[in-house]
Image (cartoon, rainbow, N blue to C red; front, side):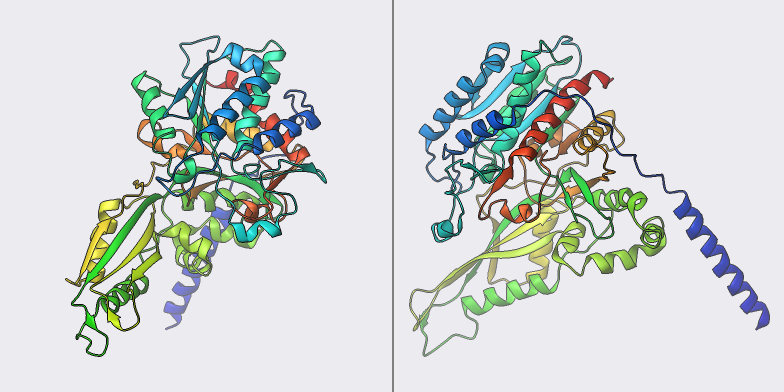
Length: 491
């Protein structure tokens, strides 16, 4: 027995040594960025231009709903007036009906080009929320240090900041070292099928193989990741797939006073309950593991010890992440019933009941594997399962965080807040962006909204009182000017 206890003690000590050594081998955090030159930004003028952009109600409603083409074409004309140097130097094409593709040739056209993405459309404002807005949502008001309105965070800020930065660079006589493609979609909020997809297909058909692609997706804010103090930046290196399935239950109708043994509504309810009771398996593989490992250098020692030894601590980390919806969604394909329809009168048994269930598919699974699991889980011949006609995609490939392109983006992000040590963390985008259409064509597709988020700003995206601080919009313009200058460092 004594011998066994001695062996156990040695094993425990050896394990402790391994854990500590692994923790000490975690790389040091990146130092704070030094101030660097971008372009001089006239904050007041830039804010006024962004406010004017907001006044064009370029709204995307439900997929297939009519589009106010006059608003988009008015916005096109506004951009042409506001950024004359860009429109003189670049070729502009209108694709997919209302999307804009700009081509700005670089000094060396043999170098791989860079694609900068944004979208012009915004989500609608529910009428019941209108009284809650401090400034009208399409006023573009510049007040109290903010530009107010739809698109100031998602995503006219990106479109305007890119053009502001290039206009300023051109005014200084700067020409990018490699060709820039600017792609501004008109239907991102409803899937991007007629905007971004058409532009990507067009560029791919022309032989474009980008050095990297940058779209919206991540952000810079305080409290982004538990255990990492201060502000952090998250950069999307992949995004989940998207699939909506319609469940249709068929049964004998009739009078409610004589119900059948199994009703359509009952069968449908049981099917949904089974899907929620048997969620998809969770895993830390892929972008989520990379995010946790990137957090380690910036975490307190106890947290760093856990993150540096995921080979042992993964079950603990998974259980902690699973305690909140965000953490759980990072690890597995999510199941969300979103639409129910059945019945016309309280005393009539409906012959049909339908539900739509939305799935956000994690890397490692596919639309096909999701449909197969759904059918196995429901296991009911009364339930027919079929995809809806909404846009659907498999998860995107995972982009290369070891690339020079990612390093350039991370360095440029740190320069947004000079003097502040900012962790730049790769992560899995759980929503959808137009960047997904580049997935089959590049392993360097990244997602980051170049805006320092303030308190409450995450909730303002698609919400009430969407706004951006004037000074933060100037930071976004500076981000793109530094990024474009930095292209010279890419091999």
